[in-house]
Structure formats: structure tokens, C-alpha cells
Image (tube, rainbow, N blue to C red; front, side, top):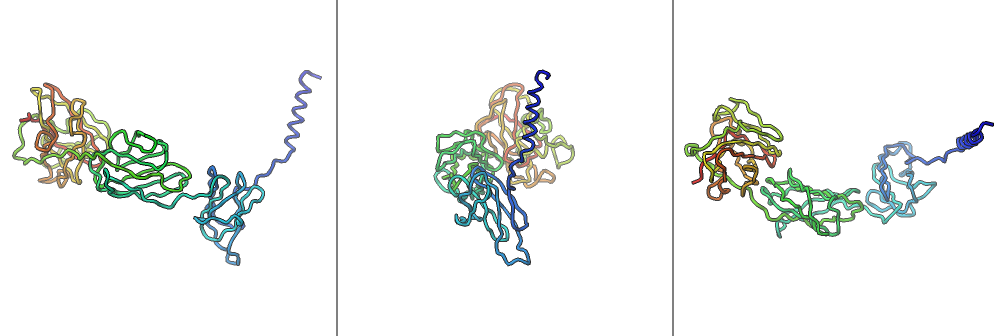
Length: 390
């Protein structure tokens, strides 16, 4: 006999024997005594079953038997939101068996933990400082809670936000947004999550809150608090015939763009300086940068010629890479149109006037100004004007 042949022969015999042993048959995941449409989803403690079954025309029965395979013996159940009495739950050969009425319903069949369902709804108080200004309507599923609602008392502006909990909650399980802006990083003290950066909040913002946490039986959120609201910096409209002299920068002469580039079509708008403007400058985080020269260092004021057919537009302004005081959110007015007709272009003063942001500090020679579109709305700009501050 060749070396190794006996070993090979024994392995072959054992393998052949294994092939002849019948596999243990597993019951189906779900079976029913009546045909219909079914779905089953398994979680760590339960199976969630949905069904739609029509009563057969020739049947006098009011119920049918539903069998669902579970990893362990069934201990509790719900029919829609009603508990299923223990006597109505049967265990047969690895399957939970329950008689249910014809129609459409959802069942929870549990083998671990306490019998529970998430609540149907709840109200989460929303506060501005210490005053309640609204609430978020919360809906629940087996994965957690989603709450939302409009809160017109908060925006527009910049605000700090905190979420206070009734029990410890993982920061990475929580997300919150107000309009288009959302919290990126939280500071957590064991009970309260505080946003590390203020939120940019538009008018009538819709606040959305999500908590991903299984097994909720009530809202884990005690309240959401907005505080330290900073209103956007305003601008002043200047009559066209009172526009001062200064360094004029055509808006279409921007030197850099990040995001969605605005459109420039000469002759497309009414009475534009130089025959062109930029339009569809979006409030989606797009940034535009201009370079310009001034003859001497010192304080200068910024004017813009704009049109806006929306309720307004919000922009952040940086100069030479720095954000001057009060220019992290500037509110530019709606002008009644997009610059296609007389009266739809307005001259606005951004800095240096009463109740406006302070003058810009510019260097002699070349400077840069960057404008970032925020809070979704569009803006058209004909030109920028830099004027020595008086």
C-alpha cells in the first residue's frame, strides 16, 4: 500500500458517510394557514411581523394561524399596540404560533427582555433662553425617535443650541438641524449636549432632532434650548443719487469660487454697471472671492449694488482671510425682483453707518474680500464699492 493511501481512504469514507446523514430541516421563517402578503424583521429581542390577509369568501373563520420561526421560545407579544395574552401564544417546534384576525396588522413577538413598544408620539419642549417658544412633535420607531417642527421665534440669526436628556445618551446617537445647518460636534457633560459651534438659522426654521436608541418607551429628551441668539448684521439702503465715490469692483470679476459658480451673461439684466452682473449666487455655502487695490491703509466702508427677489439673502464676509466683527452673518434685503426692471437694483451700505458693522480695516495695495452664501436664498450682485470711512 502506498504511504498515505490509508489516511486518504479513511477521510474519503468519513466524508461519504457525512454526505449520507440527512440535514436537520429548519421550519420556514413564516407560514400561514391563509394566503396573503407578509413581512418579518428580526431585532435583538423580537420579530416584527406585518401582514395583509383577506378573509376567504367561503370561510366562516374569523382568524387564521400564523407561525413565525424564532431563535428562542416566545415569551410576549403585541397585536398592533395591544398585548397578546400569554395563553394565546403557543410554541411549537421552534415556531411561535398565534391566531390573528383577517385584515392588516403588525405583530411583535418577543423572546427576550421585557414586553415593550415605543410610544406613538410625544412633544419635546423648545425654549429660547428660559421661555418656551414651541415644541417638536416626536414620532417613534424601534430604532429611536425623530422629532421636528417649525420655530419662527428663533431665526434668523446665529444661536447656541443644547439638548437636555432625561437619561445618559451617546452623543453619536443624536443629530439636530435647524433649516439647512446642522450640529457637527457636541460637547457632553453626561446629561446635556451642547453644540460646539453656533447654528446659522434662517427665518421660520424647521428644527429636526433624531435620537437613535432602541428600546425607547418614552422620549429621552427633556427639552431643546436655543440661547445667545445673535441677529444678523443689517444694512442700510442708500438712494442711487447719493452713492459715494470709491474703489468699484465689478462683481463678475471675482477671482475664485468654491461651490456653485454664479452665472454671468452680459446684457441679461436691466441697467447693470459695465453691462453685466453675477446672478444665481446661491446660499448653499458657495464662496466668491474678489481682489482689489486701495491707495492707502485704514478704515474703509463696503457698499453693494444688489437685487434679490426673495425675502432676503444672508451672507458671511471675510476680508484678507479674517471675519470682521458682525460680518459672520449679514442680512441683505429683498429688493422686489432680480434686477430685470427699474427699481429692482438697490445700493446698500454694509459697514460704517449707525447700527451697522464697523468699518473694514484694509491694507494699502491689494486686499481680498470673500463672500459666502448662507441659508439657501439667492442673490444677484452688480458691483462692490469700497469707500474711505469718514
